[in-house]
Image 1 (cartoon, rainbow, N blue to C red):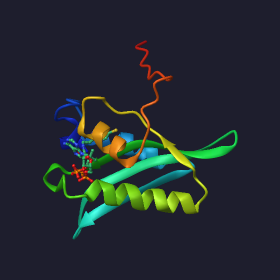
Image 2 (cartoon, rainbow, N blue to C red; image 1 turned 60 degrees about the vertical axis):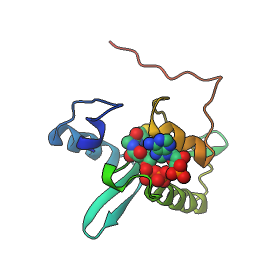
Image 3 (spheres, rainbow, N blue to C red; image 1 turned 30 degrees about the vertical axis):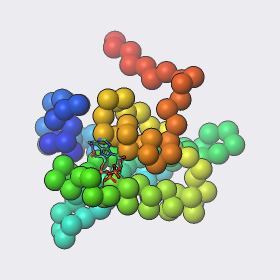
Image 4 (cartoon, protein in one colour; image 1 turned 60 degrees about the horizontal axis):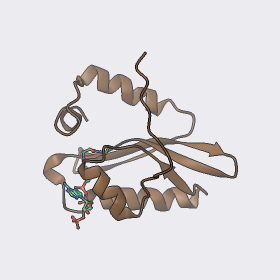
Length: 128
Ligand SMILES: CC(C)(COP(=O)(O)OP(=O)(O)OC[C@H]1O[C@@H](n2cnc3c(N)ncnc32)[C@H](O)[C@@H]1OP(=O)(O)O)[C@@H](O)C(=O)NCCC(=O)NCCS
């Protein structure tokens, strides 16, 4: 997580400490749902979020989704994403919300999976 999001296009400034703090926050959500994909004993990709009831359906909110750079373009994320969707479908979850940067590999990935870039919606950040 640290090496992936400290690189372009994100250019964040994560440390192991802040990454752990962030991951523990997600893990503590009451309806946390996540999966990892491993190569031997090494985690090479992860998807993490939580399920939330909304009116007529329950939706998965994705907070983290990534694959280590040396494992990319081999279908690892597709495998992780599709298996997670299948599991969520069995639990009655009917869709997912998430944000990403338009100019990113993740944007192309989500579009290829059939996700919609909602033109009637806005993604805000309000700096206090
Ligand atoms: C997005 C990400 C998870 C994709 O992982 P991956 O294992 O390489 O994805 P896949 O091999 O399953 O790729 C499936 C499809 O996604 C698209 N895609 C993936 N990486 C791409 C890239 N760098 N450029 C353009 N399209 C890309 C392609 O359509 C690809 O199909 P193809 O290989 O047949 O062309 C990975 O690039 C990543 O971890 N990025 C950094 C973290 C991130 O941005 N996470 C999302 C935050 S919201």
